[in-house]
Length: 128
Image (cartoon, rainbow, N blue to C red):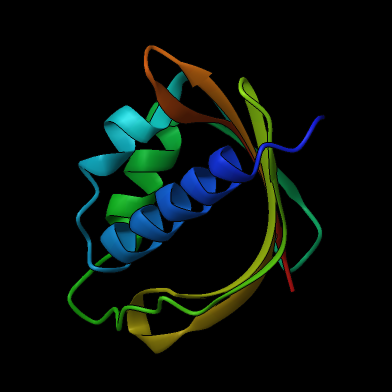
Protein backbone atom coordinates (compact mmCIF):
# COMPACT_ATOMS: atom_id res chain seq x y z
CA UNK A 1 0.00 0.00 0.00
CA UNK A 2 1.47 3.35 -1.04
CA UNK A 3 1.00 5.74 1.87
CA UNK A 4 -1.10 8.82 1.27
CA UNK A 5 -0.71 11.20 4.25
CA UNK A 6 -3.99 12.96 3.52
CA UNK A 7 -5.96 9.68 3.50
CA UNK A 8 -4.13 8.46 6.62
CA UNK A 9 -5.35 11.59 8.44
CA UNK A 10 -8.92 11.10 7.15
CA UNK A 11 -8.96 7.41 8.21
CA UNK A 12 -7.80 8.32 11.74
CA UNK A 13 -10.37 11.11 12.00
CA UNK A 14 -13.07 8.72 10.78
CA UNK A 15 -12.17 6.12 13.40
CA UNK A 16 -11.89 8.75 16.16
CA UNK A 17 -15.40 9.90 15.25
CA UNK A 18 -16.65 6.31 15.41
CA UNK A 19 -15.03 5.75 18.82
CA UNK A 20 -16.56 8.89 20.31
CA UNK A 21 -20.00 8.25 18.78
CA UNK A 22 -20.20 4.56 19.68
CA UNK A 23 -18.81 5.16 23.19
CA UNK A 24 -21.75 7.47 23.81
CA UNK A 25 -24.30 5.01 22.39
CA UNK A 26 -24.78 7.05 19.19
CA UNK A 27 -24.79 3.97 17.00
CA UNK A 28 -26.49 5.49 13.94
CA UNK A 29 -23.01 6.27 12.56
CA UNK A 30 -22.47 2.53 12.08
CA UNK A 31 -25.08 2.27 9.34
CA UNK A 32 -22.95 4.37 6.95
CA UNK A 33 -19.46 3.69 8.29
CA UNK A 34 -19.84 -0.08 8.22
CA UNK A 35 -19.82 -1.53 4.70
CA UNK A 36 -22.90 -3.61 3.86
CA UNK A 37 -20.68 -6.69 3.40
CA UNK A 38 -18.66 -6.06 6.56
CA UNK A 39 -17.38 -9.07 8.49
CA UNK A 40 -16.46 -9.16 12.18
CA UNK A 41 -14.17 -11.81 13.62
CA UNK A 42 -14.04 -11.59 17.41
CA UNK A 43 -11.88 -13.74 19.66
CA UNK A 44 -13.24 -13.68 23.21
CA UNK A 45 -11.26 -14.10 26.45
CA UNK A 46 -11.58 -17.89 26.09
CA UNK A 47 -10.05 -17.71 22.58
CA UNK A 48 -13.34 -18.74 20.98
CA UNK A 49 -14.03 -17.19 17.58
CA UNK A 50 -17.33 -15.40 16.94
CA UNK A 51 -18.21 -14.30 13.40
CA UNK A 52 -20.76 -11.58 12.78
CA UNK A 53 -22.23 -9.60 9.93
CA UNK A 54 -22.78 -5.85 9.98
CA UNK A 55 -26.33 -6.28 11.30
CA UNK A 56 -25.29 -8.87 13.91
CA UNK A 57 -22.52 -6.61 15.22
CA UNK A 58 -24.68 -3.48 15.39
CA UNK A 59 -27.32 -5.47 17.33
CA UNK A 60 -24.57 -6.79 19.66
CA UNK A 61 -23.32 -3.24 20.31
CA UNK A 62 -26.86 -2.01 21.03
CA UNK A 63 -27.26 -4.75 23.64
CA UNK A 64 -23.86 -3.91 25.16
CA UNK A 65 -24.56 -0.17 25.47
CA UNK A 66 -26.91 -0.01 28.42
CA UNK A 67 -27.49 2.47 31.21
CA UNK A 68 -24.73 0.94 33.36
CA UNK A 69 -22.16 1.41 30.63
CA UNK A 70 -19.54 4.09 31.30
CA UNK A 71 -18.20 5.29 27.93
CA UNK A 72 -14.52 4.85 27.14
CA UNK A 73 -12.77 6.65 24.31
CA UNK A 74 -9.30 5.38 25.25
CA UNK A 75 -7.34 4.31 22.18
CA UNK A 76 -3.73 3.64 21.29
CA UNK A 77 -3.01 3.65 17.57
CA UNK A 78 -0.20 1.37 16.40
CA UNK A 79 -0.64 1.62 12.63
CA UNK A 80 -2.74 3.87 10.43
CA UNK A 81 -2.06 3.41 6.73
CA UNK A 82 -4.01 4.26 3.61
CA UNK A 83 -3.80 4.90 -0.09
CA UNK A 84 -6.61 6.25 -2.27
CA UNK A 85 -8.70 3.04 -2.10
CA UNK A 86 -7.76 1.03 0.99
CA UNK A 87 -6.87 1.67 4.59
CA UNK A 88 -5.80 -0.30 7.62
CA UNK A 89 -5.69 0.48 11.34
CA UNK A 90 -4.16 -1.53 14.18
CA UNK A 91 -5.39 -0.17 17.51
CA UNK A 92 -5.72 -1.07 21.21
CA UNK A 93 -8.94 -0.07 22.97
CA UNK A 94 -10.49 -0.29 26.40
CA UNK A 95 -14.15 -1.08 25.87
CA UNK A 96 -16.66 -0.78 28.70
CA UNK A 97 -19.43 -3.33 28.72
CA UNK A 98 -22.64 -3.26 30.71
CA UNK A 99 -22.31 -3.86 34.44
CA UNK A 100 -19.02 -1.96 34.69
CA UNK A 101 -16.89 -4.68 33.07
CA UNK A 102 -13.98 -3.37 31.02
CA UNK A 103 -12.45 -5.31 28.17
CA UNK A 104 -9.02 -4.67 26.68
CA UNK A 105 -9.04 -5.41 22.96
CA UNK A 106 -6.72 -5.14 19.98
CA UNK A 107 -8.41 -4.49 16.65
CA UNK A 108 -7.24 -4.88 13.08
CA UNK A 109 -9.59 -2.80 10.95
CA UNK A 110 -9.76 -2.71 7.14
CA UNK A 111 -11.28 0.21 5.24
CA UNK A 112 -12.31 0.72 1.62
CA UNK A 113 -13.11 4.03 -0.06
CA UNK A 114 -16.43 3.44 -1.80
CA UNK A 115 -19.51 5.54 -2.58
CA UNK A 116 -17.59 8.70 -1.76
CA UNK A 117 -16.65 7.72 1.81
CA UNK A 118 -14.42 5.46 3.88
CA UNK A 119 -16.19 2.29 5.05
CA UNK A 120 -15.07 -0.50 7.35
CA UNK A 121 -15.08 -3.86 5.57
CA UNK A 122 -13.54 -6.06 8.27
CA UNK A 123 -12.71 -5.94 11.96
CA UNK A 124 -10.67 -8.63 13.68
CA UNK A 125 -10.98 -8.19 17.43
CA UNK A 126 -8.75 -9.90 19.99
CA UNK A 127 -9.88 -9.77 23.63
CA UNK A 128 -7.13 -9.69 26.21
